[in-house]
Amino acid sequence: MIKRLKEGVYNVGAIDWDRTLFDEIVPTPQGTSYNAYLVIGKDKTALIDTVEPQKFDELRKNLEDLDVKKIDYLISNHTEQDHSGSIPMILDMYPEAQLITNEKCKGFEMDLLHIPGDKFTVIKEGDEIDLGGRTLRFIMTPWVHWPETMSTYLVEDKILFSCDFFGSHVATSYTFAKYYDKVYHEAKRYYAEIMMPFRNFIEKNIKKVEALDIDMIAPSHGPVFDDPGYIINAYKEWIDPKPSNMVLIAFVSMHESTRKMVEFLADELEKRGVDVKIRNLTTSDVGEIAMDLVDVATIIIATPTVLAGAHPNAVYGAYLANVLRPKAKFAGIIGSFSWGGKAVDVIKSNLSSLKVELLEPVLLKGLPNKEGYEKLKEFAQLIYEKHKEAGLVK
Image (tube, rainbow, N blue to C red; front, side, top):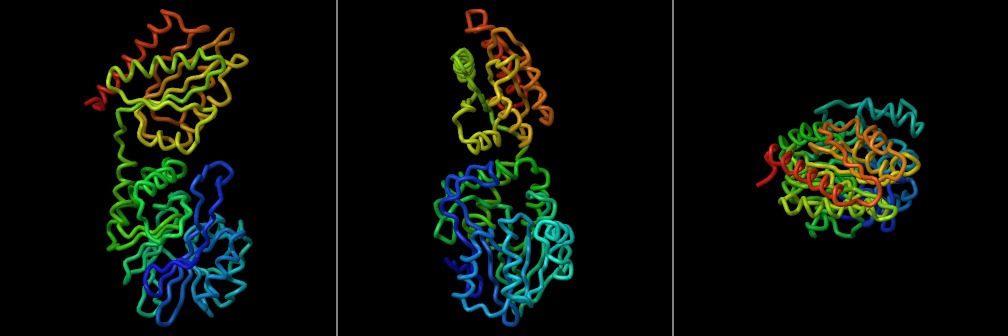
């Protein structure tokens, strides 16, 4: 499906309507798209990025339908194969094309795609290519979310081809974002799952983007934003270092003891004006948990004890928070045990990368009793006071 951004500027990529898992870990319930952009100048033609190799036929057909006889420049903004995987096939179709990218991307693509070094033309920050009446300028935007990622700016048309930056895993037939509540949700999911660990880099890259005169942001996944401020402001909200007055309780319960602890703690927190999200680590969509982590001030891992340690799903929940490195300020561990007591140590070891204050754990033996509930009430009060001290409670 060919999508027209402006006369002579087209999305010729592919839609993957039924892809439900990305990189064998990231759920994509709305499918996704692999956007490749064709820019036609008076003298030269450029293709910005390609598609997953399995979707190459769709890209090829779109180019044939537009009767593209020649591609002068093939621009690679990013190495991952959902962007670069069809480069070898495009070079076979258009052997005269110059493969344009930065030095780091060149090295990665020589390793991953076995493209000979002499096929590349290496560019740097601010370099430009004249297509005849249209100018492409290259903007280095590293760590969104790989070290070599760059963006390509179409100067005269004020379009930023931002690669993964500002993307969303959405399979859709429309060209421009319109159902903004849906797009916001999927863009936040995308940010949470792959961008959140790189907040500091994103802040710097947003400043680069805002220095440009932009009418459209055209990412490599999902719809194009013809209201760039919408997605830029959303990113600013997500990277803001101040979290919300919210607690995420990610739990597993085998025989209901831990569940009772979770429900009691949540009720006590809500009585104190603290918002709570509860996610069952056995059944919840990992993308939804990642989105919760974007905002929360406190992360609680709640686990039963299994063979003297934490439940494997609770370990995964802690590991997920650890690698995504959210802006949370506090973390805690609660749970139930019968005869083994190493669950806390296991969870702690999987939270080592978080810059949080680790609160004193609450680990109860068996089903919580009156004394146990009193400990949970004190724990809720401690969290409330920590949030208040951090200026999060209104």
